[in-house]
Image 1 (cartoon, helix red, strand yellow):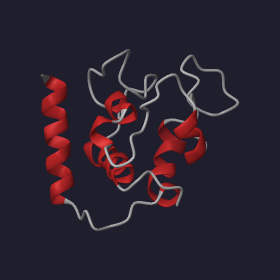
Image 2 (cartoon, rainbow, N blue to C red; image 1 turned 180 degrees about the vertical axis):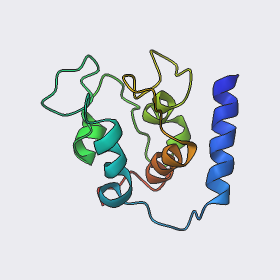
Image 3 (cartoon, rainbow, N blue to C red; image 1 turned 60 degrees about the vertical axis):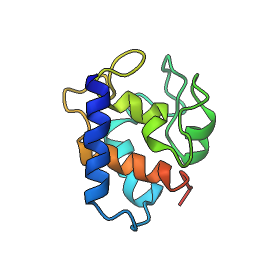
Length: 120
């Protein structure tokens, strides 16, 4: 139930922000990935999930879950669900940080995926 309410809050945030703005992986998403995710999710790094976030191609092809990102459907993409409290499996990401992503930061991931998860 808490995950559902978190998704509702994120959707509200998305509605309140400009949905017309194109989200760029390089300019908007990767800076967050670099600071919050790369410690554990580099291609050369050993991690149990085998999920690498160095670039868009790796995000789309690595990991154990086929629906890590569902272009056009950010809210149901496993990557986004893992950023929310009480994900379907395991712990909320980033796992080794007490400082989780903000709703606005998660919203960037959702909007980027909703816009097709382009390598831009």
